[in-house]
Length: 529
Image (cartoon, rainbow, N blue to C red):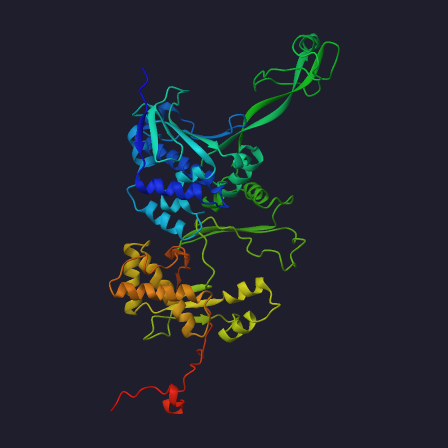
């Protein structure tokens, strides 16, 4: 007898999180598929690692894959993996509560209007499924437990019961009941587009169930019989699927004895055939593999002219492949064409563009930091002049204004203390505010202007409140408009690089140095009797 379903209440933070996701509009809803595929990939990694020490773990299924199935009639999308699966306790602990502070941090960033495209870094990527669905079912089978069904309609609770549907040997099946306005994800074209954009280089095969068409040879009398008995008014015969193993002679033609008809069938298509070859040893990669990867990445009909495959090891380790096309692009000299065509798969986050780089200064003694313009960057005066132009070019403004170098003094006590606090907790809001306060203050001291002085002022008020022991966020609040600390470019050594020139003239003070030159109403009070 099947076990009755049990109802559990979501942790308070999870309920608030789903409420924010459902009731707030986001333009980048496609990230749900990336997060669910990433979770499936993690589950496959876990079972593969466990099988290294215990090969019997894979007896329930050695095929490690991810499969996406769509049902237009039920308006559902199903993502199935053959990973490690979840027990009943795992479902309660992982899908209903989160022990870490990731959920709370994500909600703070969400309410402040931050981008949720990197929701996975908070550990709550599964809940992005509610961006496109109003009901979610999770069926999972672990080697050490029975098969269970987890279900929630994004309310304040979820149910768990023993599942008696189609058995899974091992793994997890996520069924999304899509919203009325999210039916685009039932289309094959849309799913292929999202997978290619976000999950093209997942290490396990991603299969999509697609509808294909093939020829089938049938007897002529069978076709006539079906036309007369099954559907006399139909222009084409109704043909049943005979299975994928049937072979049709390509040279076969219609005759009196047989007919060649078209029929539709379902088949699995692998969406990520191209593997991340940049992670392999260059000596083990053939010229054909380089060419195949180049064509899949650029859609070029010709082979590449040259390729440079290398890796860098140091404070920041990465591997890279640079291709040189055989022909120049037709629109190479157009100003509106994007120049940043190098795709980055080293990190999942994008570096902020406020400064060109952050370096260790060799000129600062008493100051913690300063802003230095690069050799071809705009000075503070030139930046103000260009911003005042009515017919300025926006693309040039963003490019030239970002050519600033943020130099820090690592021996300064402020920088050292901030580094220690950042190492202890990278999500510390006070550390982030202090770093941005240092950056904005150095902008002002170098004569530059701030994009939003009001945010800078509120950040100062917050720091004053913390200094006075006032920790009420409602009284002194700063919008969390900035990303995490690693949004700023990483530190780089300054050896052998073009330091540029430092802004020599700060913004002039409106007050004369000699107070006697002031009018009587503006004269400063004397501090001496």
